[in-house]
Length: 318
Image (tube, rainbow, N blue to C red):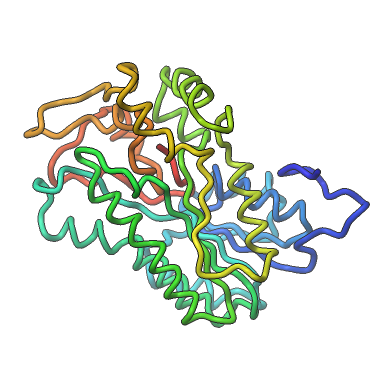
């Protein structure tokens, strides 16, 4: 069996030979791992990201054909990127995007509008611009999370945002056909971002997941990448949502209620909000679709009116 990043065995043909895969937000984590696996399966890979230095390093790691450094939230830059692609492409995977979190009653109208619409608007803009470039039976692959099936104090708007994505994906699949559109819903994924978020609690978090997940281990970027490549290659799949959380959604409530070690580490009063870093330590929270800003992750606090998440290449951290 071929693992992520391992050259394809000579006994079979590469699954993506002669195809081109674009990863929007491919400079780290799940996006980078998917690019590596796609390249190992014979695809030409194009990576985008906001940070030119990180993008250059990722391109070397994934043997990418080309890169483009820009903010995917910039509609003009996104349009220019797709217009400048020299040839048709086969698959686009989107791991960029930025949900927002905070107590619902402390968010103003503008914040709520952005929180609810930003993820869908980003996916729609990518779909609109990529549609004329993707070959028939190609794939637009979006990222979501299984966390929308659980809600917690201060995180409800994030759950609402991720809950919008499955029906959005299905509707978009009908409109873009024969181009296929699918959604990956991830749980906790063990990436460098997880380490930066949890700090000295990372090993404890890994131990908790190994002890409670039905699969008996922690989900890694290679697990998500393997699913992504399968969706790209199986042309019968469209309009669907595919979970990859190791069964976390089925055991999360039991874990959260049964272990004092899983309580929020920086819990404050309901009036002042709660420490989001503490929430990231629990097992039942909505999965974050983009990384926390380093500034916010360090403080572990949330202030009304402050944007707590920024766009980035890694998704589905819990």
